[in-house]
Amino acid sequence: MNSPIALNRHHSTNPIPILQNPKPYKSYKFSNVKLPCTIFTNSFKTFSSLNNRFTVKFPYKTRNFELNRLRASSNDAQSIAGTSSFDDQNEVREPSFLEFITSERVKVVTLLALALALCNADRVVMSVAIVPLSLSHGWRQSFAGVVQSSFLWGYMISPIAGGTLVDYYGGKVVMAWGVALWSLATFLTPWAAETSVLALLAVRMLLGIAEGVALPCMNNMIARWFPQTERARVVGLAMAGFQLGSAIGLTLSPILMSQGGMSGPFVIFGLCGFLWVLVWVSATSSTPEQSSQISAYELRYIQNKVAVPSLSKNEKNTREVIPPFRRLLSKLPTWSLIVANSMHSWGFFVILSWMPIYFKTIYHVDLREAAWFSAVPWSVMAVVGYFAGFWSDMMIQRGISVTLTRKIMQV
Image (cartoon, rainbow, N blue to C red; front, side):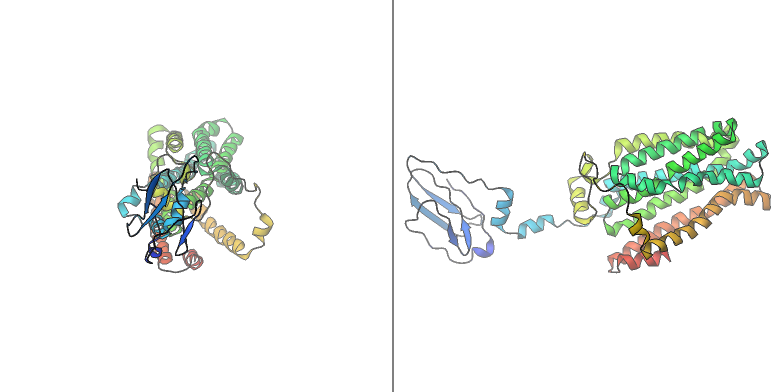
């Protein structure tokens, strides 16, 4: 009976002598490698390497005692066999295009893009509906601006709280609650508009609070599911959904209002949000390690490439709930990002909220045509955003630092 023991190949090149009269319970060294031996009763045993390059024989008899059997763990086997084969197994090849588009992480970012599309579609419905609402209730444009801005009262606060909740509970749970709440607010908007102004403002504020968690959830999920060389393009893909949501909401709202009254788009988009929540809860997880549908290859690829620590299964993240605001606000990059996003949001929300009214009041076009004109910037932004992300990934893959790449794209 042969008991094979794997030895490192570069240790087996030296000639190995045959031992004479070995002492019991010893480990013998061959070229600085310890060779453990298991001895059986009344027999001559042969120990050979896996590559059969040498044989060592031990003429030894044992009686009336037992020896503990050596059980080599996987770590022991690796230390005996060397690290070359172990390293080869851990080298994960880059996925092909087909493997990438059919992977679990692409399913996650696709659902994120759909959620962000619903987020902006629910947001811009009021930009179209504010015209008939103002006419039916006799609102001035200044008060119409108050109704439009009530969304931002909640949206101004919730991203900070939402980011903290995402770090603590994971993106899956927070995103599900966010979409459910903003879909409920969208669904209730026609009822609130007919009830009272305060009810309408409260529902719009709830919409802003719920939608404020969308981007923190997206950033958290992408950081945990995608390696750094893929993040820019998937952010571009997710944000393409965000911008296309504006185009879809602006173009479909007049059509739905003409068929189902002013409540038509609010009801349809609200129901779509509830349907999305059902799919999201059943088909995704906050981290790759928690996914029951991910393949072993994709999980190994993500674990080797992603530097962000994942949440333990069935455990909450134990990091502090309150972010270090004092430290963050003392950093110049923080303020540069705040200023850049403030200027971006200024133009973003002015165009998003007022373009349909602008085309109708200044150029006297039909509301449906005004919505089509208003959708053009968001469609262009969706296409350009994806290619900008693809370009960013190419720059990082070619050796340009992540910081410089982000600065270039921000400018």
